[in-house]
Length: 223
Ligand SMILES: [Zn+2]
Ligand SMILES: [Zn+2]
Ligand SMILES: [Zn+2]
Image 1: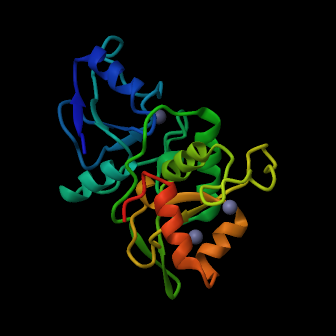
Image 2: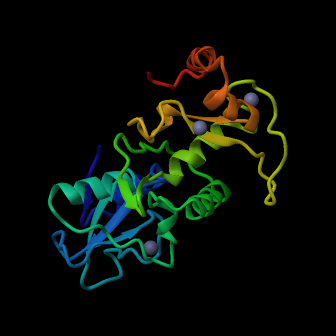
């Protein structure tokens, strides 16, 4: 967790931007966070007010990622920030229960590239939906895990079986401890698998052995 506020320190802000590709900048009222005005942006967004050019400068509150921003605001009983900026399409960083939205966001993040590592979510939000509960997922975690796998299955090391429409190797992102059983939505609990290995990890008779194998192969995983 690193929550930073930059007011007149534009240079400090520029440095922060360079190392936070999954970061979130909340623009709020001059001098303070205001629950009625909390707009989220991606770090490089042109709509973020800069000190040099403006008379009134809105405060800039910087978070490592969307999860951190949402959690912080919840902690001080503020509403969720607006992810509506159309200049930077910040919604690509918003955790979601919508599988199609997740896929779109992942595509955007992979196309743009990134330099930082997402912190993901230790306790991803559970959203009641019809008679069940859906669990939010972080597009940044999916994008990072896919990029790290570099087109090869994290379990069997084979190449992805095919390319997607947009030319990406097709792999599926799997939570080693399932989200349903309380597993975190973080890179230390997720792997990229070919469809066969993915189904095997869920349904095979030997899935316990596969679980051991994946923990040994992928160092970043935490039990
Ligand atoms: Zn923006
Ligand atoms: Zn595989
Ligand atoms: Zn799975």
